[in-house]
Image (cartoon, rainbow, N blue to C red; front, side, top):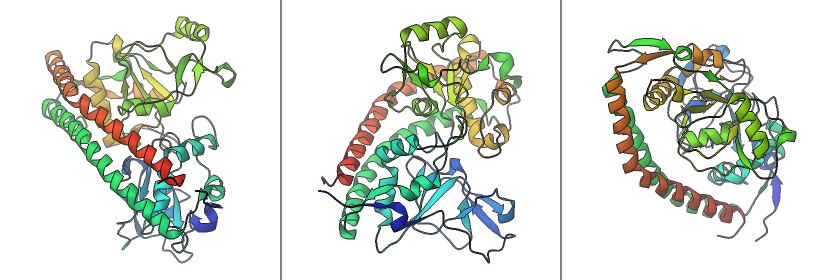
Length: 395
């Protein structure tokens, strides 16, 4: 079925301006990047004075669709449909694009699933602008994006079908989230809150425990059609979230060997994380298959070369990032982790036997949750397939 393609700006507003008469001294509810889950749910909110927010603050209204401006958050599906938003006070952000559908032409729920679609995210990634460290989805890309526009009744039918499929996907995801909650609970019970350190553990700088750095630079001209997988922050973040990936970039075996001889490559139990990591997407390397990764956008903690348990260290960093990310990261536009900041992090050091016990518990827990994770991945793939069919007019 061939539906007409229309520019998004013809059927929706992109980043509507603040009203001219708005009171800049008012308190507003600010939505940071970490506040939106991959399921499109709002997790946390902050209170700020409007004039103290950064330039580019955009108000949200009920039934708006929001999507992350930056990489890797954009590719990871940071988007939400604000169908239940309480707009009794100002609500907005500087970190999300806002798309406001013209309700007589475009169904907001249909718009959300379209924006959330994996194909759209890959297309948006190819149109990002800016430096390697601060790539973003430009508003002009959204305004000129051509979207399939079936009749309004068909849009609502598609949205209803995807709503039902998404509920099944969320139930699968809930079981995985409960396993994550269990791991967090065990960590806090054994070691206490790492921010407050109620158990009085001694601490050491991360840089004194192990090497912290990144990779050697790989240039665009170095990529080949097939060979050794090359991971960016996007892929590493997904691996850190137990997601499957399909590498799209590769370097030759010869180049990989040169890099390995010159500066080494990650080993099992090393930690890799995107430089923008407010939600703690830390990948604990678990296989020996060769790969390489992007300098600057991915940070490398050589935890395989320290006596501290990698399971403990990964969980500790996740807790710290979730609690204090903005005080650790830096940047004039988006908070990004720097090597120096990571090296200076104070890491609490509980007794070795407690760390070993924690690792054993995590190993046991992972055996029980592996099937759940695989089922969640399968359901996500089915949902993506259904979405592709929906927007191709094949439902």
